[in-house]
Image (cartoon, rainbow, N blue to C red):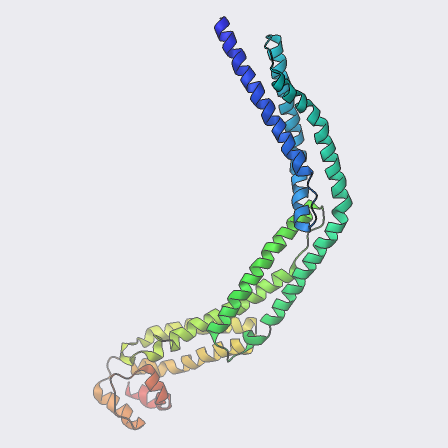
Length: 325
């Protein structure tokens, strides 16, 4: 029994010693954190957050310290001798309670003294974001975004930069909203951010759909560059109808010159499709092609591309083509 008791004393002593050191270090770390003197808005917000977290830890730390005392009282009842160095640490743990409370009180005082100044600085930073958003909306409502002659790829590159700018502002806005919560301020609404995102989404949808349409019709492997006999006009018509539907919807949302360009292009192709479908009739024979091309004043070329047909003004002979087909 005496061996078991001695083992229990040893285990308890080790636990008390380790817990005492650990709790003391935790108090010291928190006092050090509270002793920092933040100068700028970001550091001040971090300081307030740290102070709040430490404030929530007080009860837990004091309870941990009380548990250490209970363990040492139990060791004393077992007549366990405590080394002097260990006793010094235990005394330090008792002393640090007062230092800890002083650090908390000082932190509360420092925050109270600076909170108005930092709240003003925060409002100024939020105002800067709002101004930046107004400038972005102005750019989106003018410049290349509204130029119907602009290259879609170039505009989309510019819009990628704008997206990154808006995302950066969103990140800051989220950060500032967190600061306002820490400072017990009412949150800013950021209506300009919402408006900017909506305008950006409209512009991006328009230019991205326009780019896809241009790739489909006029890109390096688009319809116009293909040998006409390799195309499937019935499938083309479905694509034209789908894109026209998108173009009309976008135009109704915001009737600008770029949206009109997209809509007009889709309408033009819709007008072309009856002729192209007629030319795609598999029942057409060489003699039929010869008749059509004779009217055009050109020899029939079976390897012609759709672009060739467009350049040769095939749609001027729409009635002949449809009648022949």
